[in-house]
Image 1 (spheres, rainbow, N blue to C red):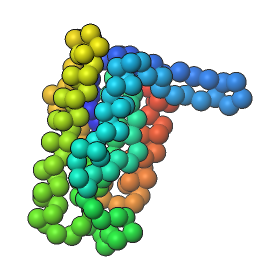
Image 2 (image 1 turned 135 degrees about the vertical axis):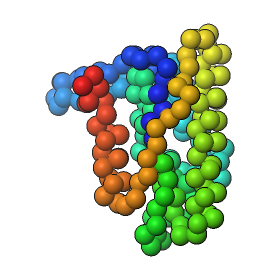
Image 3 (image 1 turned 120 degrees about the vertical axis):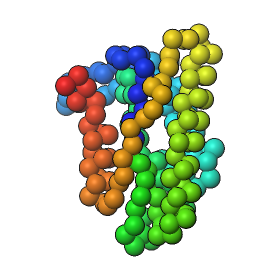
Length: 158
């Protein structure tokens, strides 16, 4: 899942490169980015049966995987659905209910983080109205998405 800020550039932080012993590229969040990070981490505290997987707050967007459902990966027989969200279970009603939960989760996250940022006096901050999501269908795809998220700072600006 990708959620973008309306303003492009370094609104949530900067990409830093450190090469003392080994070169590393990472995101150095500013206060707005820290608020976004804190709000993202709070998602499971506000939604039952929701867990966070790999995520990163970038200078102008967030990438993340949200796990919806109370079944664990070891118990999955093969049916996965979601939008950069893994929904465990084979019951169509279970899947439909959880997929409908995703817009509520994202809307709540965007609303809470925007309000907290505005309370700091940064009234110009806005999220894009929509977000990009995709279905993760198997372990290989899950690992690819995780790798993409982890490597995203190295690809900044490309």
